[in-house]
Structures are given as structure tokens and as C-alpha cells.
Length: 100
Image (tube, rainbow, N blue to C red):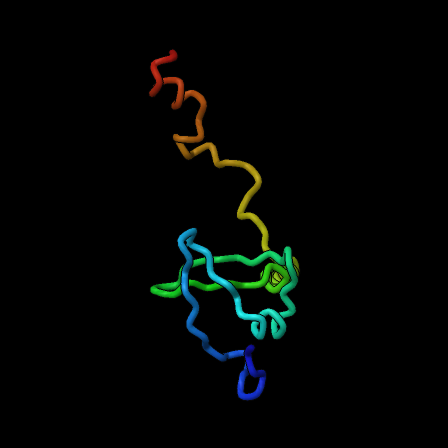
């Protein structure tokens, strides 16, 4: 049984990988992060470290990013291609492809 005294969110516990490549997330960690059976986690590699992140945390970050982007005043330089760009010209493309 894991003693909750002395543990914090940054506690470290050594876990072993079983024959099928699985690990068990200790109960204390599941309680601290409110992980329930069926909870989704995102797994990725950062350098020499495997990182597990709760999906709801990731979704919150994406939502914050999206809201920030929506507030930015971003406009395209132009809505039409300039005719001086030869790679935009249908005539140029047809000539290069030998379709003329």
C-alpha cells in the first residue's frame, strides 16, 4: 500500500514494464491526477523521456491556443496570385508539361 504522506505531484516511483510492454500507474498518481478506468492519456517522447499527459489537459491547452489565435488580426497578403509569377500561369505550366 502506498503511503500518501510525503508524496507530491512531483513524486517519482520506479515501475517495471511487463512482458506485454505495459506499466501500472500507481494508485497515488491516479488519485492525484483524477485518472479513472477508461481515462485517455497522450504519450510522447521528449528527448530521453516518455511523457504521459491527461487528454483533458491537452484539450485545455489547445483551446487556449485556439482562442489566442482567434484574437490575432491575421490577414493574407493578397487574395489573388500576381500574374508576374510564372509558376502561377496556366500557359507556363502547360508549356513545361508539354501540353501545348
